[in-house]
Image (cartoon, rainbow, N blue to C red; front, side):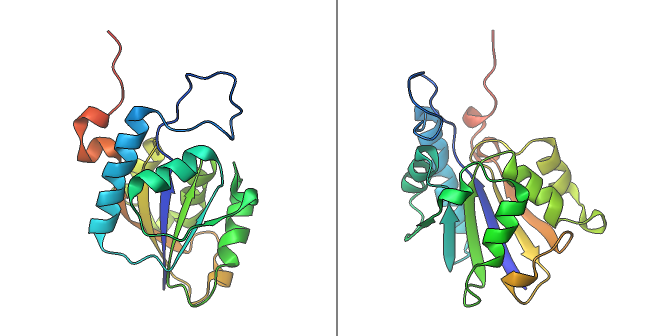
Length: 177
């Protein structure tokens, strides 16, 4: 069995409309959420043998604010990657890595969960992730494979899901009015 952690980047800052999407960093609320989720991930107790990530500024800032141990492997192909690309990159992970963390963007991450969790493995956590996989969400999937190269549709089971609002209600959806 392999363990895959999935961390979506934290809330991005849209205040500078002159920045490209790739160069957009984190909002102050995003830095707070990334730090909170980083502590949660560390407390969850999994030692990540490999961390692969999009090189976009908001992903790099999420990892920096999280306090998660480095080094991270940034890969240009992971920037806004689709499910096929994500699966390809996961299949290339070193076999020595039992536990890998992927830090990325939506909709790719959300679709990856739908792809890896088969209908017979859907549970309450899956239902919550299906409803919304917000910024800074963290999920853990157990993959019923011995080799990363064997990852395929339906090989996983979602065993953990945490969103910033689950840990701090202040980081829940912003309310208007």
